[in-house]
Image (cartoon, rainbow, N blue to C red; front, side):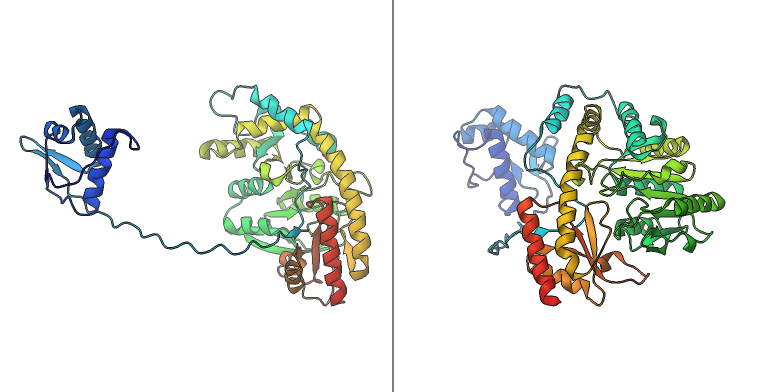
Length: 455
């Protein structure tokens, strides 16, 4: 090896000597000081030249040979391999950071209140998980058996659905359960009815699997069952609290929907996203209580605890659950053990029930205040349940209004975001659950100022 090649090893440098030596060889190849075919000195000569042990030189050569930088020729020695050096990427000068914008106050729907302090029930659940060994191998693809049993009892008690563990599949949330169901039970080209206005994620999920989405209107009671056609394969519906207008499907219309599904063979997909929170009467029984032969029920922790938990459940016939579990076993797509185990602990010690009761009191007070301060500006609908109200504002450009609200530091959702082809009045969908008390009142004050100026 050319003795003029600078190689400097320092025993106080970073890293072992053989790695320092290997990196200096790489640098020499990258910058062209060492060319392909250049003969390298023996490990003995290199060690003597650098005043290191031969084992250091040998370890460096072994590393370079393993990476493909050098190659040995029998009876001839060691040579630089035919490596085309890459040009180093030039780092551009970093742009100066823009001044931080003041934080936005959010009144978007669908996110529960999360206390900045961790309460005892949450700590108990995770403490219980921390002292358990993980399961041997992989979990059951339908979910932990004990969790499915506990959740079947919970769903039966609070939602009126007669079911057992064989009817339960643990999911990563509503959207995950919906996608699993659509991918396995429907075929490309099948027609699925979805409420309009309605949940945009359900529309995108259906379109993702090549389904034809049929927009079906709603009135003050929810889905217009009379508008359903017999060529539909499925209907996605939010019967306990229509999203986002808030109608609740009355018993007569529920019975009509079930009779229609049995007559046509269509699957009813019930999204039960926030039914635990009613402020006028007890929570309405789930549509699925009328028959799991036609209804698949989707539940979630997103509105109860946090959407960040990514955990929910699907209630269906045993045949459907078995089929979905077999598919998940093939693709390895189910929630991890720690979150399932924590959820089981929350169910067993009553923590989830405690959270629901506490949240219901908070949301009821905030609902009352929201309706009181916004009533002068438009018609309020959907105020009997959930985490949001909808303020109808006929003749208003609600997207422009939402943009102005954002400029004022408040995030709200325009009702037009939820509409597709069925006409209806514009408005704002206003969530009241998420902010702290101070941010909640400040956000409403700013929104009322904006609405007052526009009026």
